[in-house]
Length: 496
Image 1 (cartoon, one colour):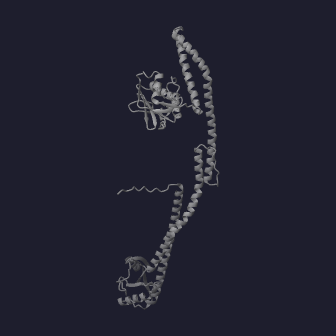
Image 2 (cartoon, rainbow, N blue to C red):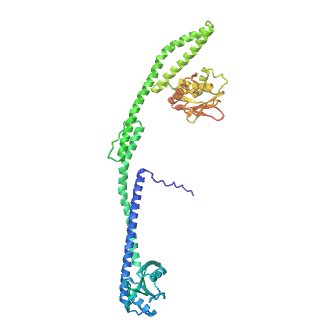
């Protein structure tokens, strides 16, 4: 038998649900509070009405029966009084009892009515009628205590200016009918709660819709802004906080659009300036390079004085460095203008690695080790792959320590080439910026052989091939540069 895992319940967490739930909770709290207060008021009214009517009826009966009772009353006289009171109870069906001073409680009923001790103690000390609600036999009861007073030679019920006779009459009546009325009232309140909540759901949904409609419009507008549609504007409706938020959104969008246009203008101007400067420098640099080559030959042949020869060599080196930087700027301007050409052809990455190392004399260099296992077919531009490889290996030789290991593998549908040196690695603060243009990790050196464009051009060439170039520090080694490129699609099968 297999048991299928039951996914956990996920409740919606949207703003609409929260608004509706909050509205329903508020409605439920208000309904419960109103129902509770109403129930308490109705309960007090019903019980007070029963109590007042019973007290008045008992007083009337005592006014009629007490004057005929001889004092001090005998036990039989008290029993006869309670019997007459029970008969006169009528609709209340109370059970009465009587006690003279501290004597025993005497009742005509087979069982004495529930009379609390606290009620008896209070009745002996006071002269006014008192009452107490009690539970007896699982039923609610109302216990009454009424002292009997007398004037002249006649005993009468309680009244002002009269003296206590020492006789107290008790009456207990069941509150079953009142309890039934209260239970019916409670059931009616509970039955009305669900329809009230169901009715509250309609205005809750309407209110949530009214609140969420401008929020959705703001959300859609923010998504369009994030997608680059900076001309997005929203129409504010009403005069509430959401309308103010909409107007603030429009102001923000207008500011972003204006700043974006200004940044684009400045960026375009800077790119055109760099491209124009690089283009204008190519011709004089070509002439300078030709002249320095002739001077290099003269310096090498010894026809120039030593100091002049050293100056010529310095000028030649600087001229070649400037020429490389200008070519790099021209290439950067092509990438920025999206006009960099890609002349792709089917090649093997191992062949490109071997050719790059051979052209630069690194194939016989003991500092460079290659690990090229298995074919790695590519459809790529050989010249641009050569730029990437030359920059990675040259950077490892210049900034790291040998040996520099170059590995090429085919992993899945990607070609992976890694260049690993055994130096100190790249400083952690420089790792995020190694492919930035003109960035140099060693800021203390104001002048270096590189222009800071080599790794940036390698990165752009990798992107041009739908590839990626990353840099990390390896444990036990130095910097690790990883180039990933898509493998060439396999040739279609030949027809049989």
